[in-house]
Length: 266
Image 1 (cartoon, helix red, strand yellow):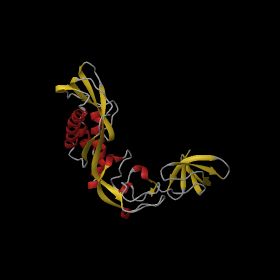
Image 2: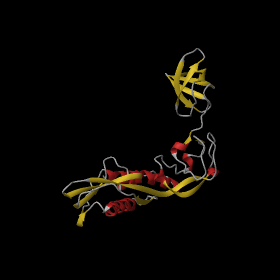
Image 3: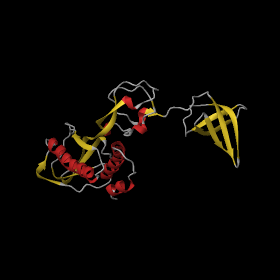
Image 4: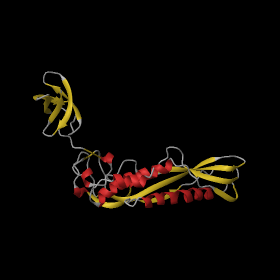
């Protein structure tokens, strides 16, 4: 599958730098994930057998294989605004590896090259066919909205609450909300601090009404509708389902509409 071609063909026709950034994240994730299911073909024939004291060489092998692959996938996606950075970790100093003449880097099944991850190295030619994993952190730098001040939980966010800056999108698993439309008018799900990048888990829609509120229940049938009153059994968000207890004691489930209306289709 040509991930770059698919992203370009399916890209939504939306103007603006930030919309491009949001689409770039989806494409970058798809491209990086494709590396995780593609078998590694690079093999390294050591000038001399790798010994237990060559941990630095092993880590360098992992970097030499991973960095060009990441840079290539980013370069192949011309719409990507994300800049990759690879930070290699160290192998466990307690490891005792048998000498090996040929080593192959690989990615463990299900690996995501996003945030904290790992690259495998396996011995193909040696007395013992060992396998080790080098820790790696993959950063993805790109434009994101960063809070300029503290925001108490439950506060509705406005455009003035954040500034645009280059941040690491891969620092957390929650998606970055790259367009103002995706977070302006939403409320903080918990207390937010200055310097935090606005992500999907940090905001939620403002309820149209709260639990216990009196609402109108509009029942729709074939060619008719009936409106009765009821009490919301939970907070209601426009477009989402909510349970309502009718005045007669019956409980129904419907879709929240603007104006404290719950729509029930018969």
